[in-house]
Image (cartoon, rainbow, N blue to C red; front, side):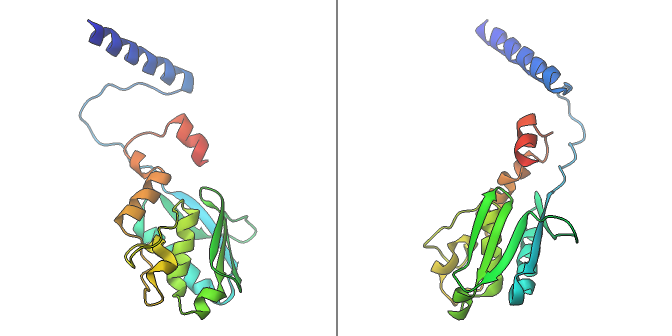
Length: 187
């Protein structure tokens, strides 16, 4: 008896929520899967990346090939970018402001010490995509960063890093309609 009441109450709550948010209820039935959500497009401005521009473009391309829920594109002329990329003489770093937004510095200090520019670019873009450093770590972990050593040139995220970015940008929700809360966070 309690199970039916609880189930009925939950169903009613779902219908009220749907009506308040403008959603519609659909009967659960086997049928075609919902279309995946489009990738969230983030633009980047590498005009200030100096000699590292090609490495930044390659790092963005690596992320584009690795995940479905987000796409990094060069900013169009006259538009404001989500991500600004600058070259400087310090250590590489990313200063995310919010998920998908911030500034990346491709520091010459690490390059001068022998670290790979494409790995640096992919790693720092990973921070903007919501990934933390994971030090110490093996070369197979992009977010292990400098702890993998200068011999490590792997610019590719591993499966766990890809999954985390997919989750950060709603990839786990690809088969479902976005909730009102998800739209507020991602827009």
